[in-house]
Image 1 (cartoon, rainbow, N blue to C red):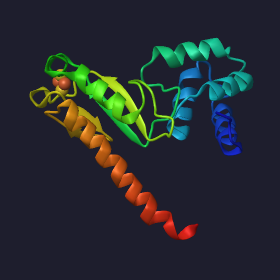
Image 2: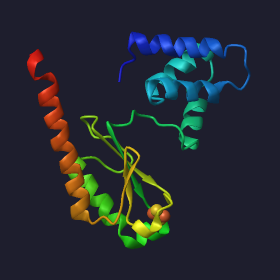
Image 3: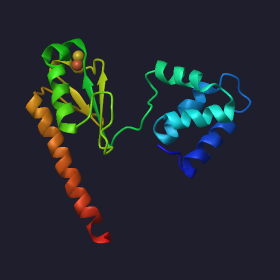
Image 4: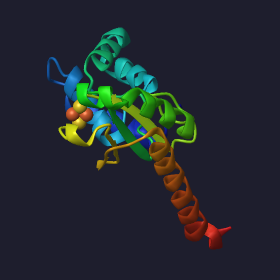
Length: 170
Ligand code: FES
């Protein structure tokens, strides 16, 4: 992923803002993620060049704290609960079904940027397990088939929106 001029400007501005702070690595990385959606390897390289903080140190921070992401979230952010109750209720099978239907592995984003699958801890609605959240909306009592169906519905609705929204501009 190349850095765009716009992204470069944002990174330079953030680094400049923390120029005189010691221990600024974490706030810099947090602000980059808030503004640009992730802390990609290219962003890390650029921050390292601009601050002289070794890239290995920045990588260490990004991989240690779960709040940081190395790649942007997909359009549909799917969190799969792997807490004890959901695990016993079949979270693994739900994960496999979602991986098949979205074409991406848990912890990754699909190549078309549509789906990000993420494994999370208890989401606080164990009686509905197995549970997933799609862009913050909880879906419970899932089966592998129901999970696949949800993804197919999202794909269908995305296709309909793309066709309807941009059809006239080509
Ligand atoms: S274990 Fe899944 S919601 Fe609690």
